[in-house]
Each structure stands twice: as C-alpha cells, then as structure tokens.
Length: 411
Image 1 (cartoon, rainbow, N blue to C red):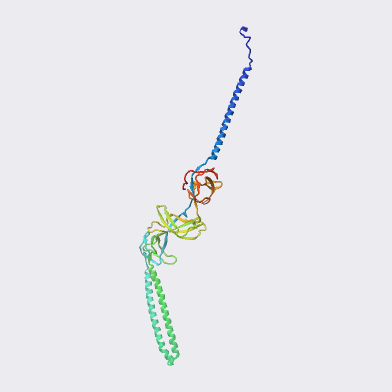
Image 2: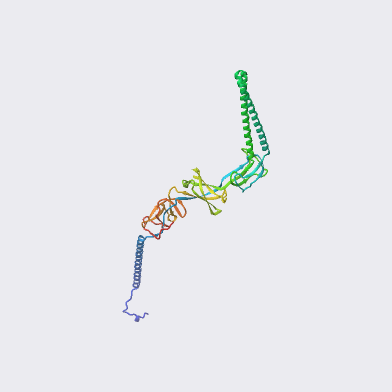
C-alpha cells in the first residue's frame, strides 16, 4: 500500500517535457552566440586583411626601389681579335744536286746554323774534270784556227791590194781581179766562222765550269739545316726531273705566321697593324710583330682573310711549326659601346637594358655586336655616359620610379 501521508497535496506536479525544452533553448542560445562571435571574428579578420592589402598597395605605389647602376662607355678605337695560328719559317729552301757524282764531304748536319754561302757538301765527278780539260783543249785549237783564218784573210787582202792597180791598168786580166776579190771574201768569212766556233766552245766550257762550281753545295741564306738526305759516298744525280734532294735550310731569324681573320673583323685589317703572339709553353713571353701582307680577297668557303705576320726572332726562341695564339689590334670600322652583362634583360621583347633617367627607369632595346663575357659590345639602344641598372628585377616596368643607391659603378 502507498503511504499517502508523505505526499504534499500543495506541491504542483511538473510536466515531463518542460525540462527538455528548456535545455534545447539553452543550447540554441549558446550556438547562436558562438556563431555571432565567429562571424564577428571573421569579419574583423577580413577587415584587417583588406586594410593590410590597401596598406601594401599604398606602400607599393609610394615605394621607390634603390638600384645600382653602371655607366655605359665607348669601346676603344681598336678591336682585339684573337685567333689560333702556326708559325712557319720566313723562307724554306730545299737544296737539290746540280752536279752528278759522289758526295766527297758533308760539312753540316741537322740543326746546324749556317750563313749564306757556307759550304754544305762537295761532290766529286772525275769525268767532269776530263770534259773540262777536253773543252779547254778544243778551245785552244779553235783559237789557233782563228789565227790561221786571220792570216789567210790578211794574205788575200795584200794580194788584192797588189793586183788591183795592175788589173785596172790592164797588166793583169779581169779574171785575176775577180779571183782576188772572192778569195778575200772567203777568208773574211772563214775568220768569222772561226771566231763563232771559239764563242760556242767558250760557252760550252763555261757550262762545264758552272757544273764544276755546282760540285760545291752552299747555303742559299742564313738559317738552320732542318733536313739532311745524303751522306759521304752517296750518289747524287742532277737533271731536270730526278735531281737528288740533299738538304732543307730554313730561315728562322724572322718567323712568319699565317692567320685567317673572320669577315666581321677583316675590313679593318691592313699592313702595319700591331700583333702579339703567345705560345702556351712560354706563358711569360709575348712576341711582337706587325701585319706585313694580306690577301685582298676573302676565302670563298670560310669567308676569312688570309693575313701574314712577320715576327723578329733573332734569338731563335720561336720555332717553325709551333702552335700559337695571335692577337691583332684591328681598328674599328664602326664605333661600339660597352654594357655590363649584369644589366641585360631578356624577355619577350628581346634584349633590353633599363636606363636610369631622371629618377625613372626607361627600357631600351639593344643590338649586341659581340659578347665579351662580363661585358657586351652593343651597336645601338644606348649612348655613352648613360647609366644602366644592374641586376634589374623581373617586374621592372618602363617609367617606374627608381633611386640610385650609390655612385655609378664602372662595369
């Protein structure tokens, strides 16, 4: 049984659903408050972001970047052109035998220095000596024949002078006078023939004596023996086709160097231009020379100009056949300007530089003539004395304000 005595009749009975509704309202109010706070916080943050963007944009508009600049300068009036080359002897002579016979003596060998006229070798040919003796004897006979012919001519002349008055006065027949005249003419012709034979024989004797002189092989000029193909006892032949090659002599007190100058620099090349020659094995030596001769036409295939340079080599330091580098100081046909490589801008507009002009940057399109590594030679787009911006930013615009950070730097 239920104890009704403990029940308060005045106590109201609370409905079961009232507590759940109140709890839901509390949650909704809390969620609404959080949403309001979140929206306010987001709006505040968005406002701050917009303010920062406006401040950044204003700063960007008012900011003037400090830039480093370099001065554009004119290139020198002479353009250095550096090309590879090989040295050659100023003159090279291959000495051939001009007399047939055997080598009796050899006075020089490879590497010997010789003077013009120095004896290199001697050739013996006994049969040539016999031919000379025979030619001299024949010449003596012909000279005697000339004397005999002259005596006969003189006798005929005396006979004619004696008989001519007698024939004229009729003491001798006319036939005798004719015989005397013809005899004198025949003797005069005989004298001329004898004298011609003497001249011919003398010429033949001179040829033999010249061949005798050729038995002494001498140096054609001052130089060095670089090749020797004979020795004592060697048989040498002298003829127009198969003469024996005996020596090679090179003149090395002056070295000749040939280079091929490209077309873009060939226009300013002319005799007298200074040249410097360096050899990799002699890094501390610079050999000076001058352009002595040029070909007046470019090579059709390579479009280059053959140029020869003479270099004094009295001490013989430079050897023929050496690889070297030649630097020419070629006068420029057109002026050029030097711009530092760090100032170049490459974009869709080609090659440009930014010139600092009146506190603003001006973009200029340039034409590059030659790349020198740290500098570039340009033909147009800038002027000497203008200041180009070094290492410009990629977003640098034409007309943008700039301030020079320091004094202009030399490129």
